[in-house]
Length: 212
Image (cartoon, rainbow, N blue to C red; front, side, top):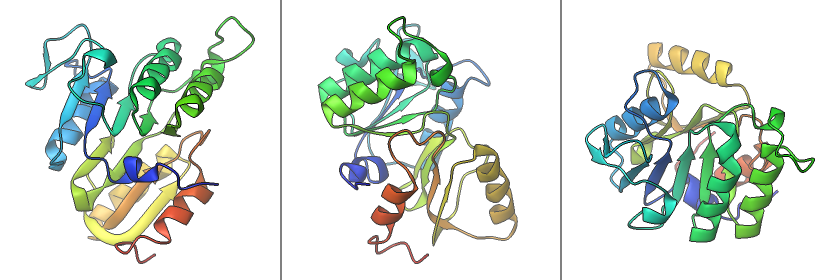
């Protein structure tokens, strides 16, 4: 259990979306939409070699082409490329990543490991923290950060919500919107291969904007 580098996850100054997309319904499209609509004040940098722009934002062909090292990267790519992307991000000095991608544990890499194994190994070599994989993402309404593919935004508040289940996150967002309840943080852990309940509770326990 460690809060190392969790500031880069919960208080990033810049965000890259790896696998950003203009295709309606694609996870990379939903994440970009939510980030842009959330009001995040830092740079939002989409990465995808197929596009010159995503949602009107200049898009970069790969991690190496980014104009600055992102504090946080949101990974929305197919499983087989996630380990190499994680390696590139960690080498560049990115502090944290949210791995939205599902199915990493089912994808073998030919060396007896899975894509999930190789992703975590790459992150740890570079000291990068990983939320997920197979998660809904992260919302920090107080700074306008909606790094998720949630169908609704979260309102600002003093309660932090943390869940392994993306389905439960979706249900709670619906309920909270109806009852006008806000959140300081809304965290979907997914498979929690790195960042887990202990890390998040330890971090949020000392956060002055989180009451419960």
